Length: 234
Length: 234
Image (cartoon, rainbow over all chains, first blue to last red; front, side):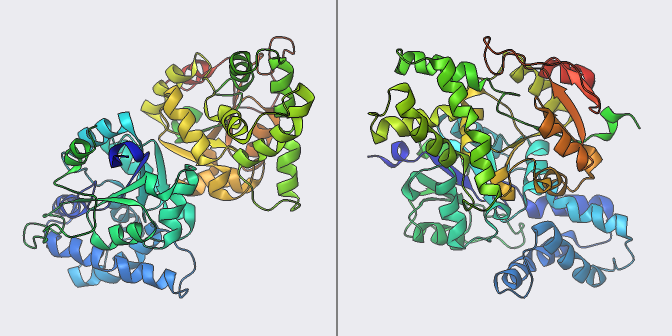
């Protein structure tokens, strides 16, 4: 059977794949704190992300939502950027910039086309509230918001990928993960899911372009989410 | 502050409140198994629902999804309706009628209006896959599908009502439960949520009309979901 016919559910990575976290944070910092180097600030914040999740995975931290991990990292990096005097309300507001990320320009069109043919859901380490607020603001038409919060495990834990198949009562091969990150796609592949790689050369900003050379193993290599729709005939 | 301004999230009960389980099962049985009394069959299936959840709440059964509880009840009642010879595929298909329930005629309009002003989510004992398939088929425009499956507890367990407030990082009084069942609304009220009662006099069919007399304690008493939108100025 052709992949496009066999697949029933498309699960999307979010940060970097569907939304532009770097550009959105740079834009918001330019308004809120124009003296700060937004490019370096956005990257510093994101750099803390995987180590923070690793502290949860190792058991050093109990189960912790991304909103709370983002806040721990934020408090840690603020002094480096001269923002140590932000008060609690300002920190809370800034921390929620992750709820206000802009979608890449192709995202709404790609998802809308894919939704006609497939069940489309998030599969993000971001928490449910974050993903819902983001979708509402950016117009992302999910059928369902799935998150590490549902499975109490962060990607690339197999419980997340296999959890999607279980939620929808389908086989792993009937689920395709769409993501801009090879480690995420490898985790999904190891669980028997289909995979589509999405190029996002500017994920880390124009100053640090990403190598988006095709690699072995993925079912599709697409430029963006409209490309995913084209590849799947949607 | 007026309730309509203070509330940020509307959480909806589903079976009976947003969708017509009785009428939908009657219609499907009339097609699949026309010799069966669909009215009695639908009520018998639903009657097994609360006792089945009680077996989970008491610990007699481990955590079990509604799809699986529905199947246990179905297998139990089939002989009573002369359907003991249905094979595994037929049972699986019939069990998923709960994914194919029709919305009440006012539901899509009411939800669409409410979504413009509020975050709207399900809060159902139904599992995530069931609720997502139902929404996709019936056109229910949820911002987010929340379920007992997310909280590993069935309503009226406080973890479900307070879980909605926690997911969206708001106070319980900023969440309103919309439901056609007084026990559900009472559970939400006890946790500090706002409540709106929705009349569904034909929930159990025309042969068994429900008493929908207003009762004390709810913030709103509405005829249907368009009525909820009117009450909230949406």
